[in-house]
Image (cartoon, rainbow, N blue to C red; front, side, top):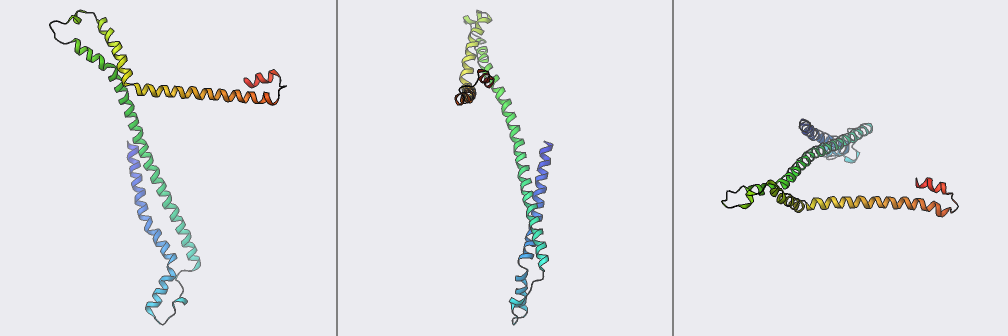
Length: 209
C-alpha cells in the first residue's frame, strides 16, 4: 500500500503542476497572439486622430517565433502531465482490482469449503438431536458417511453447476482449437503433395514430422 500512497501523492503533484502551468501557457499565447491588438487599442484610446492600422506591436518577429516555440513546449509538457496522471490513475485502479481479485479468489475457496462441509454439518446436527427414540443413533459411523458422501456430491453438483459448465466450455473450446490446428496441419501437408504428385514419400514423411 505504500506504493499506492506514493502514486496518490504523485497524481496530486501532477495535478498541482498542471494548474500552475496552464495559466502560464495562456499568458504566453496571449502575448504572442494579441500583441498588435493591444497596441491598436492603446493607440485608439490615447490618440483618436491616429490611424490604428499603422501601429506596430511591441514584440519583434523573432520574439513571436520564440514565444510560439515556448507555447509548443508548454503544450507538450501539459499533455505529458495529463498522460502521466492518467497512467498513475490506471495503475492505482489496477492495484485495487488485483487486490479485489485476490480477495474474491480467497472468498471463492472459502465458499467451496462451505459448500462441501455444509451438508456434513447439517447431518451432524440432525443426528446429534437429543431424541428418546432415534434408531439411527445405534448405527455405526459408516451409516453417517453412507448418507453424507452422496449428499455432499449432490450439493456440490447443484451449487457448482455454473463453474462446472464454465470448465466444460473451456475444455470443449481447447479441444476444438486443437482439432482446428490439426486440420490446418493436414491441409498444409496435403497441398504440396497435390501440387507435386511425384513428390517422394520421404519428403512427405518429413513434412508430416
